[in-house]
Image (cartoon, rainbow over all chains, first blue to last red; front, side, top):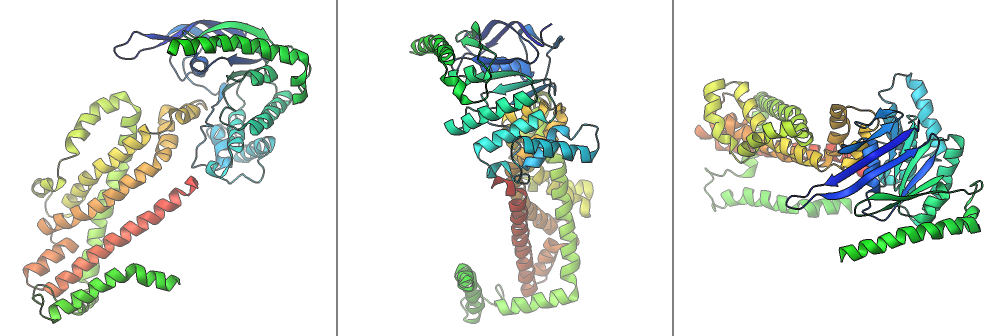
Length: 261
Length: 249
């Protein structure tokens, strides 16, 4: 059985005095162990909501989500989450943030210290152990958040536009970092983004979503040779993927603009 | 230069002290109702030497610390729980909202009746007066915490209660500390006014006792002590706040 199964998930919002707005309509999708799947779509298509449902933060109204065969009913450490705005604890240092998930685990303190240090090294933040998040750049903050999430060894990684708040150069560096981490410690990942190139570069499969109501339009398998550097994005194959996905997203984004008018 | 800054900054206070000394001496005000500052300071030295200031001062400080401390101990968790739980909010919010605007000094006769002249009545009054400002700041602070930060904590397998105390309250600390600061100022008001009316010791009692006996110089001396204590407490609290919020960068 697939590691993650979305089974006819439906989600609506209710605003007083207005008919219910359907945010997600009949979403079904299966994700295999070790896969990197992006949810790609314009803003308002419900891709983040879908991730929050899997994270267990938002109650599931209809349909079900199975994580390794068990129904999702709430948040849990088996699903590590990285958010767009980092969601770090600003009063804790880098070291304390990364240690947060380990605090309640039964293991010797020395071992925790060792794990924290190894993750600080993994995200190249040696020397910033005792800095507060307010003293770090956006890219560094997101590295702390990633390290904090991976330190508890989640079964799957959920990323909600993790690089959306970063500048273009930092984003590229973070792509390389993430791919490097995935090579060393492969992990099932659900990655929410509206950036087509990012989705092509990182993903094994891309689920294109459309809005009003949010649904999965198409799932595209990305078959690129070894992604050891951004050069692969210059290949004709990669360009074709980007162009195709862009046309799929654009038609919907344009449609969304029309609807708003 | 720092000395000059210091002098410039505090010169209005020095002028005021100067005016205080001169006005009664020049006969601009009745020296009976406002003795010159030098006379007041001499009375202050005598009060300190007699030990009256220390015994009454310690008594007052104990009431203040106990009352405010209790208000923090109860108000912070309760306010945070109200912000995090619908059920707690439904039960507690109407009570808090109704009691918030009530002048707590109105309770002085009631507390005197119930708890007598000892420490309990003063501590209870300060506790009741400070509880709501502390509770409200905890409530508003926790409500303002980014829900994603709380989700993030929950996704590490922490219980709701653990997230409230370990994440929501620390995240709300800036709001909380400013609420406690206004409670601290309020606690002095309640302390002194309750000691005027229902006590046999404490600085407020000393002020009214000396005033009733016509000993105006030592009365003014005690007023200066209370004002200074309030000022020092506020400065100390600001220092603690700055330290606790160093992470804001």
